[in-house]
Length: 387
Image 1 (tube, rainbow, N blue to C red):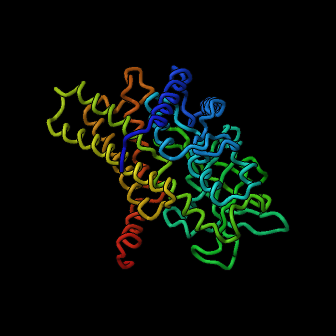
Image 2 (cartoon, rainbow, N blue to C red):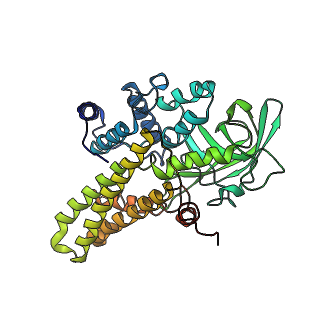
Image 3 (tube, rainbow, N blue to C red):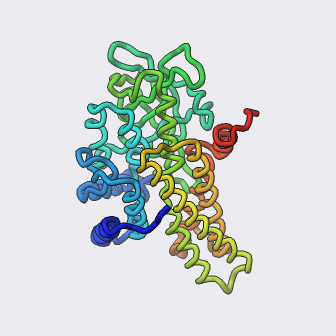
């Protein structure tokens, strides 16, 4: 793999950098998980990105993108995080559902959903997990019963990211009542303000509501809202999970920037910490670089016509555990000050590390728990027998 950038790629990087320097808000936006105002501030940022044609650069121009390849997307992400731009409130849509729609959606579905997704006009929540079907997604019990040209949705979803303030959700439903496990499932979209939908926020450890429960009681949606053929939901969801685990949801730039900040933090407190911390900081920096190389390798393979396979599980385990280790190192450097919440008057930038640590703890769980990912690696990559 040759990581020498072409002249065209270098020009693209400079274009991104110049736009970000001119448009990234000078002050951080309020959290999109705490208040409606913060959520709408991030929606406004999504619209600003769309106006600059930066909403999702890999999408075709007809859907609000630039038609660029994944290597250019990685360059964009590097400049995005370098500029300290706001987190993407519509990441469930543009990074997960969007690529899946590109692959499995009809032209009518793409025209209906992708442009509104790229512009921030419609923000998406992910509604897969259920109280008895978290890591074991094949155990979902929510149903979609066909009634003419509509589905009637019933069920209970939980841990639905962004669902408190989002506009739409995509969920897995059992459309064949006689089916079991992976068969008879369909991926269906539904508006979160539809009659029969009730959204119950779930406070996180920091009090913010990044997740919600969704209760569905006789919610009617047109069959147009089903992605793919009836009963093909499991295969489609696994494609979405591949994007989530292996490439788009956690770009390497996110961790490379965090690693650089960790090195800066260590240098500022080097005389105050145990000598062993230095090795931990160095490991974090090397891991972030190794993850970037791995993703560039994956992206290069996809650009050449390949597909994301079971190896996405190795990426997911790596970045989620790296994220925890990185934040643990930062907290050990900060000592007692690490306990200050972001809102504390004396916190300064310290609270960002604590917030990041809280969030990192969820990494080994969402996008498929790491225990499940290790099973996938054992069975599908190493060919080991099922326990």
